Image 1 (cartoon, rainbow, N blue to C red):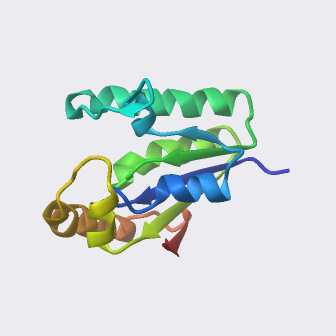
Image 2 (cartoon, helix red, strand yellow):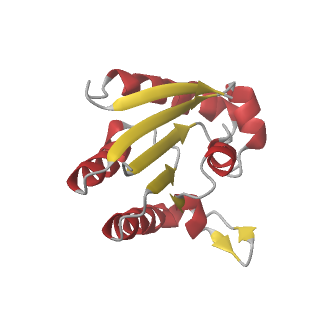
Length: 148
């Protein structure tokens, strides 16, 4: 059985966590959002994002070290810089890495997102940056788009 690391990327509110729970319920999940869960409540603090992403990366490394068969990274993952460390870790540990981009109407995503990111930011900043990043993906990265 091959070992796999899946990197879910999409707009805030695009359905990444929902897809993970539906399609990969037995996976080890690493998400910056997990860092902000306190007593079952989501308490986002943008000043602590670097710490949240560090914790997410350490979760992935721990799962790789014990050879968990399926690992899912559930983050917005806008840029190549945010994705590349996970792809490199997967390669270093002998895992197949796949990037899945969730395609979602920005207005729908804005209405559902937990961060309260305004629709104008999603439409004018985040969505275009995600599209631009895809053009910069190395050709050997496994990537697919999924409509939600």
